[in-house]
Length: 317
Image 1 (cartoon, helix red, strand yellow):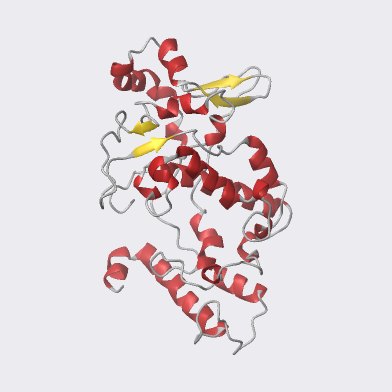
Image 2 (spheres, rainbow, N blue to C red):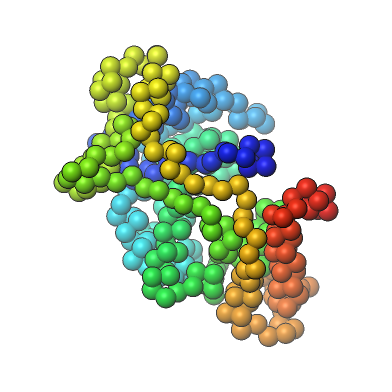
């Protein structure tokens, strides 16, 4: 995306800000100011009339009909654990399974998001997954505080064959173990709204729960009434009245990865105590672990070249 639009950034949707509302479906996030309505066909907001293509029709949602959003308690349960295997399939409880908790939000949004094959047709997919990335990074920081290196913490029990460390990820030439590399998070900063007894939330779309010292989303009705905004004229006036105070200018997403000499594959490789000529059927019936590791290093080198010379590297694919 940055190759197309150098300044573009992906915001994240922290659904824990909506979860404390009596009716989270009434959050301002489901208004024409942000993601549009959540009750049936999307007819308001920037994605109104959004065609999902391939015969699936126009974008539809049914928020709050099933399951639930992530909560602060869910995040606390995740951060009480120390290892990736403790928050992921197949060896953990639903209450601290990050994948399952994320699945619940898909179902909660409903409509297109409820179906795994077409979930990405709803733009909500991307802002939700950007938030899951934030939770994942918070967990990695927690690991480091305990002296655990996240780049070596690939679970020995990983369940499905396509979750093996050197199995193809399904995204270009990446393999699954690429997901625990530090190369992706070096230049990304996730900021979180905060407040206190003497400080309000930075955004006019949020209100402070002073008893807990945390920000919660306002409802669409609450926001409109507070600023006396007509619902059908809301977008332009709301943005003009809040743009200087949203805090968006503090987000930092540099355009490309820095070119450092990471040895993430060696880290993962050595942590598995790999011996030559041991078969690796989870990856391929005909590829041993040594060969898989060498191929992974080639892929990693390719990605470093892509940073320094993106055009030529793309031509060589």
